Amino acid sequence: MKFSLAAGLVALLALATAAQAHVTLETSQAAAGGYYKAVLRVGHGCDGADMTRLRVRIPEGVLAVKPQPKAGWALELTQGKYEHPQTLHGASVESGVHEISWRGDLPDAYYDEFVFRVYVSDAFKAGQTVYFPVVQECGQSVSRWIDTSGKPDARSPAPGVKIVAPAHEGGGHGHSH
Image (cartoon, rainbow, N blue to C red; front, side):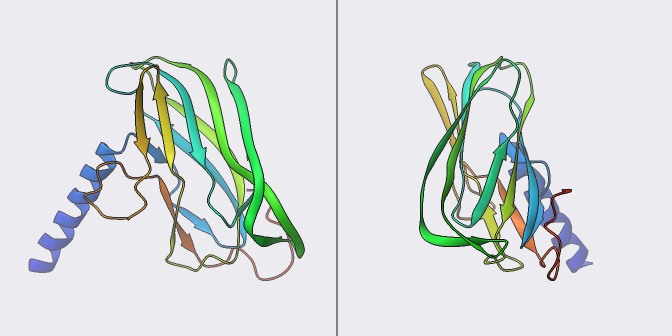
């Protein structure tokens, strides 16, 4: 009985934390060495104000970033050199996308999703969480979802994805994901 009560409390805490997080990822797991479709879910603006910009930082080791354009939104990519050279399909990669930014208008009363596809390096280990810090801009107001501590009581948790076992063992590029 104690175990099931504890498990129930942990589940409730996780739900409460997810309810607090106003930018979340639709899919909570990604395979190391494979492609991942990230869908950022935005439930509303900032403190009652309409959202005008959404920025997401791409962590080191996440490569081949391809954002999905949104009608009515301007898309901007910030690119640069990686701190450490990366490997993608056997080739060395020294630079890539560090940040994606969408500019437009999302009224506070509405919900929307912002999508991008990435390759998750096999340098990540199963059980590790990779965070995508997000900043919502709403005119003069800003909400920063950048806490990468993984603490269940974090006030501004960054969306994160749990790494699972490699997507494939040799062969294939996983482009169908």
